[in-house]
View 1 (spheres, one colour):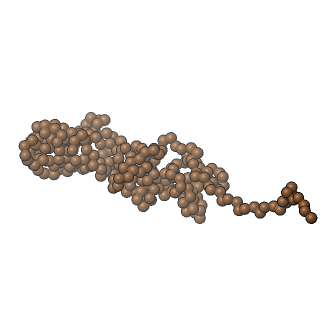
View 2 (view 1 turned 135 degrees about the horizontal axis):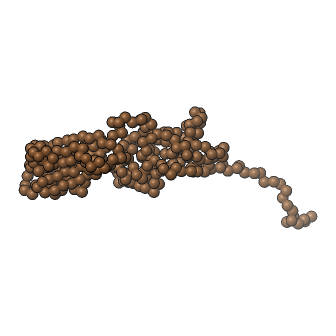
View 3 (view 1 turned 180 degrees about the vertical axis):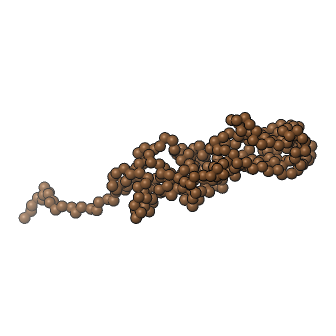
Length: 270
């Protein structure tokens, strides 16, 4: 016989498919500190390649973090924008909390390494996927090898090297390093200060090294009494001067050669 089955309901249940594996959300700090942060939009040029990187790159590679901080954080533009990354401290920021995505609870930086058996997996999950791991610098292993130790006066000093190569007329050259706030001359040399014209030998390199205080403004000025810098107007051997602050070459408004009557280099590291 013929029977209309168009209105029959299929009562056989459809077997359920496998439940999708939930993707844990990227943890986000619930309260970022106001006094220790990086500029997330800031980019700087690399010393060795035509590329730009952000603050997090400096400490991303734990083996290279120390050298990168030494090289890049000495530059005031980078240290100002990457304050958290360039910080000399090696501590977890106690004000930071984020969500443990599995337990659904708020945890802090210390939680990452609290359980020794789970610390490796927690570091991999939270430190490598969260670009704010700088706030958990100790837990995430972002510190330089010697960070956290109290610096000695020698370690905390700003190391400055001043090189002066005289030209054929050294009697015209003088220089002075001044503490701007105190208005005092730290050290000086040359006829302008000694009253003698034979302070330097001609065509000779003279070097001075200083251990200066941090967070203090200094100015090093080189003078030429004739007004032609270290590059005489007549054909002869030119001289030059250069200043290195924490290993980085820092110059004033000239190339250290043709600066007229004087040129000054500002020194400030904090």
